[in-house]
Amino acid sequence: MSRNSLLTAIVATCLAVATVALIGAENTRREGTPTTRPAQPTTQAGRDQAPPNPAIGHRARPAASRGLSPKQVEEVMARMKTEEPDMHQRLTHLQKENPRAFSRSVERFDRFLNRLDALPPTMREGFKQQSRDTVTLYGLRRQYADESDQARKADLRGRVTEVVARLFDAEQKLKEFELQQFADWLAELRKEMAERADRREELIDARVEKLLETPRADLDAKADQPTSAPAP
Image (spheres, rainbow, N blue to C red):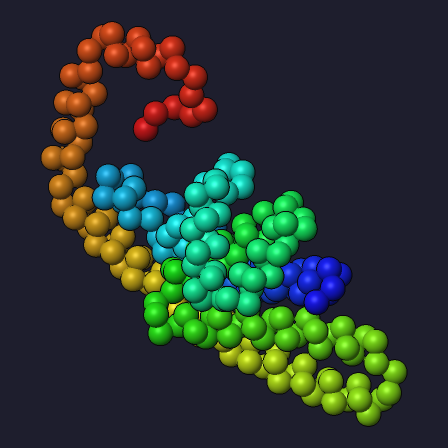
């Protein structure tokens, strides 16, 4: 495989990974539904139990992070070698030819793994198929754009329609899963709010005691620290 062909294959795969990883968020924005997480409860339990968001995944790093550490790259490549050996071979070659493109590709694949790991095992193969279908769709669109024969274009259009239909059905299943996760979290939040309401006086007293027991030295130290908003 020539270098240009290799880079084309890598770009196509990475575009698919990025597209699939953002399907839910893009569709939600297009349909006018809120995409942000609901406000989390102020209790410790609430802070420890953020609302589910399969689009992010449980391994996601903070937005402020820049790139992957060498150890993280090694972990991603090791998993890729097991689950996507063809992709691993291509990226190994790309690492020597274009280290910068290699880094971007590994980061995209890591985000794909983040979302994959957030799904239940029964949905993971379908999610992988979404990625493969997106790669297929990318190739079919290029073929359609380059084709001049009308009969051939009609055949390509039919194949594109089949792939888009599969992607639509897969997106619907993913939305159902995300909706159920959100419903479960919302039910848990309502239960926690009801319990807090029952313990209102107890929780207020405990908070007052904690605030007034703080030594003066600690108060002065906190006053010297810059804050973006008043403490609750």
